[in-house]
Amino acid sequence: MIINLQFTYIIFFFIITTAISIYLYKKAAGTLSLEKLGPISLTFYFLYFLSYLGTTLLNLRLANHSMMRYMRHWQMVTDAFFIISALMIIFPGVIILCNKIFKYDPLTYQEYRTKKLSSKSSEDAQFTTMVLASIVCIAAVIFVFVKLGTEHNPYLAMIRGGSKDQLAVLRNVIANEFTRISGYIKNIFALTMTPFLSYVAYVHLRNTKEKRWLVLFIILFMFSNMMVFYNLQKATLVMYWLNFIVLSLIYGDRVKVKYLIAFGLIGFITLNLMYYFISKVELSKLLSADNPIFSRLFITTPMGFLLHLEVFTYRMLPLAGASLPKIISAPLFGFSEVIRSSSVVMQSVNFIGERSGQAGVYNGLFLGEAYANFQIPGIWIAMIHVPIVFFLLNMIFTRLPKTAINVSLFSYLTVAFLLTLHGGYADYVFNMIWAIVVVASILMGVFSNLLDKLIFEKRQSKNENEIV
Image 1 (cartoon, rainbow, N blue to C red):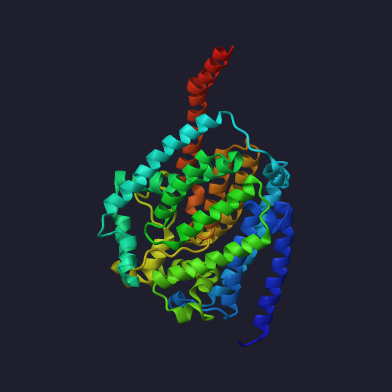
Image 2: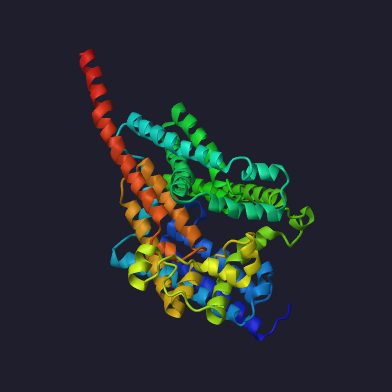
């Protein structure tokens, strides 16, 4: 490590930016307390620790990553550092401005957390609705594994002792197994709605303490874990578990720091076991300072952003809107198919791995896809647009009735939005899966109310008349 003038300057700028960002985020979110986390305050921790810190370490040459070998223009790391420094200030700044324009008190979220759960329909109607929806989704999960069979079943491949490369190829083979109708069944009912229903069942269980909700939750929890890990992708499993923490916070729990630390340790141990058994990482490496989880958590996203800057500055022409959903890119830009920047980056830097099926996509900070499509103007647009999306999410849901479905949807979208900060910008423009979950939630609420009026209210009235 060489300490020179540039090194000192970067450290100084990093400290100043951190101080300003914390001050602005406290105004934007009302609090940054770990025990009272919400959608806005969570963005600070996600951006700071998973993007800004890693970018700073790369700029100071204090971190390594396997993808660094694909960088040819390392002066871009300084550009990335200043771009993300600006993001750490602009993001809360935009939310503060929205708070003033819409006269929204950020402490409204904390008041929402203390409210009791409400409902427009009876518990029987809601349980019946959930059981019917669960049957459909569990059937979809069973369909997925039946279609995979024994040859392409990732769990069996792992038990057989498949190599790291074989499992990587299998993941890509699985992705191509499901097309059109089977793909919709897998993505919508099995992979998305089954976990979402487990969140709703969890909230009902917390609220009622009834055994029937416990049984339904356990069943949905088992099938959800089996499904979100069906292709041995660790990220989706972590996302599923993380949702329960956010769900508990929104429900009203005051999560103690010691529990967060315990969850972090359990997660760290679990991820190490996954790397050992699935990725075939040597135990000596897992126990060393070169642990891949550190690199995965703190350096992977900054490297993804750097490679986006590298590829779409020196190697590829801008995508010019091709990454946006087809319903937007087709009429506005004339594209017949969606081209995600993460796929283009992987093809550019690791063509052999991509063609062999061992490499998939390389995501980075959401600003990367914005730059890939619209260059510098895209970065500025994304810096303003995405915090507005988070603000609207927070404001809308804290003004809706606090029902089990609304709380679950609030949590689901919060986690989805947070993880997409280190994914693609196009999803914030329009994401079909998110829209389907919202529509499904509305339909479940409507069906539950109709069921209550048509069956359970009449049954209750009949029982009362018989008593009289």
